[in-house]
Length: 257
Image (cartoon, rainbow, N blue to C red):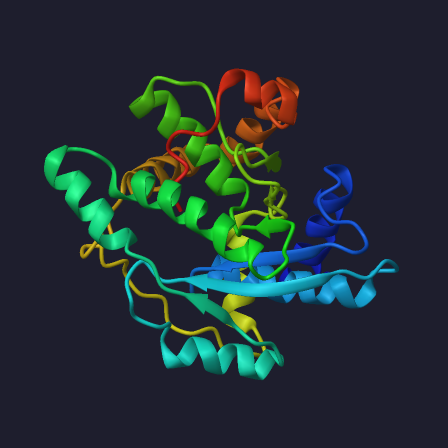
């Protein structure tokens, strides 16, 4: 029986092949948040890089939404991996905080995700990267579809790969076939201990609309464990993972996470 990490590596490799995410000669920035998803992603890509016939580079990148550096435990994690964590500061916190004061009810996660991605594109270009990998997994994709449907009035979700509108950067989500429970299992059994996750300063109670949707899906799964598999099958059946079709429908609106 395969371990959680072996399953993650296998499904990630399939996604990279299916959606032509990484090619030889690429320099891929991996967005690091400090949470389990992005840390599992960097370890998975490092393993796939080791096996790859055509060589490519991966660069872990952390973007602070303030002027504060990452926690020491995060630097220690990458020291153990034998990798250097590149990090940048920004004024995203001030921008988002001002906007949600002006627009009560606005999602801080949605605003932050939009700003963070735009800043990351600019920063990773200075490192010579042509691709940005994010740790969104299969559960995130389904949750984003429901967030858009119920709270933005749109039928859209996260594409596995998409060109940035104003940058020559390809955004990729190699975990598109990976369920969150596998990442949780791996993070708990990892030979390199994962740093403790912490709440975002924009969400002191750790509650977001994504958390609400996740809890709702959890209740549905108590009645039928196939809920997530059925949702993913429906999205595949209707070509939601074709980049050209996704652009026609519009980019993800509530893509926080």
